[in-house]
Length: 572
Image (cartoon, rainbow, N blue to C red; front, side):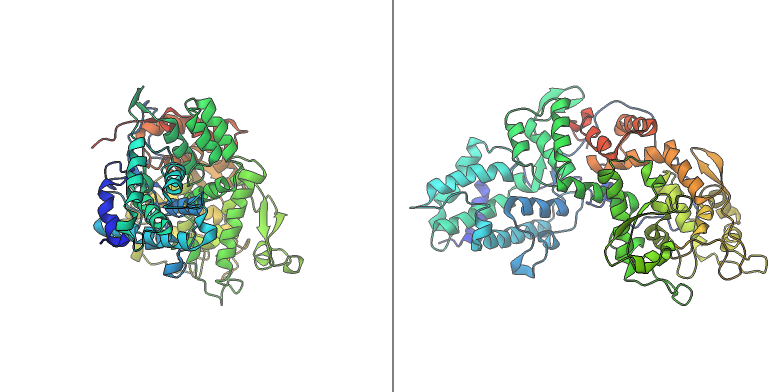
């Protein structure tokens, strides 16, 4: 006699919902498309500059995408949460389910990766069936007799949600066949044991693990997605999880075939808190903010900067995230406000860094309006300024690289050999950090990039010390801070007098606007900078430039491009 743990694998040979195998995909990590390292590749040293924002020429067409994209680990966790109510594995120290899965990666699923899906599915199935509160998320009825009728209804209803589409008659029949084998594949053949085996089978099915797009209805440039495939794209783009009942109903009724129908659903879905989480996740990707990045690894010489404490690091990161959320959702603002708004979220711990009286604040964040001549936008907040500083001084190079590469979209390239070992020079005439860095990068191998691209925006940001406090004189020498620089913006050197002046010019920069739009397209479509997405990027950039265009407008417009509702055959 089979045991269910071994017998159910044998039953998998005829299990329902298998679209091919759990195989090739091209998913990025949830932190950002294309496997981009959120810590950033540039170290603030010289290289050869790339072109801003990639190619801008509009090339009409549909970018090829995988038909069998696997759920990312973050999507897997959210899907299991919304489908079954499981957020932690009781059998494995209450860790998130994806903790036990292989890391997000492109290519075929390895044997080890497949084994991890089976192990996690087994734990989830056992946990759900052992907990009456969770069990009702799977079983929508109480089995009676042999339980066949209840299990059949569960197969149809739960399968619809798990596969993000109705099961075919053949799939239902195959799952029914598994239920009929209950006495052979479980210890006692009880309806509850069979239900656990069925849930396990659903969770290891390729139609659950993968977001298959297999409809082959010809359309201009590719295949038109079915309403169910559009619903899945919508829900995973805007929520990172399965469709809700309203979206499923629209898909079942074929009401996701036109841009207007898709727009109406997208606008509705943005009112859900899960959309807020998705927008926050994008901005972490845009900022390169997260675990194992500069944002959580700051160290300071506290004899020089006594206001610094590592306990401030998560507080400063959270303040930054609150700022982006405030602009996007509370104010309904647009790209320009990220650089121009003086709104900040301050508590007693961060107040001194902003020159505010800490006794006026408590441990909770309080919304304040800072001096707009000193603190417009996120680049003037203590989170960014701390993340992009050195141990015992500011770092015009680190700050300049971020502005050049991540804001303006100009890739400074790879540092030449030996650049990292270039010492910071000393000298009586080098009485400011700016002068020392300028001298450090004056060599022929460094100057082209540093003096034209990287250093100037970093020099403007010297108005803030290594913990983000405003400074007008060098602490060690008393020499005045010089923030005037010629910053290359949109292909031309532009005279900038102060951080506030720089923020105004970045907000108005076509390249900065295009870089933000490009990042959104890459993140939302889960592919990094494809040339056939240039038309969408250009359209979004033009709307940002015109003004009055909110972040939420941009997100819903991402659902309106032809490539959102059409699939092209993936190229080999």
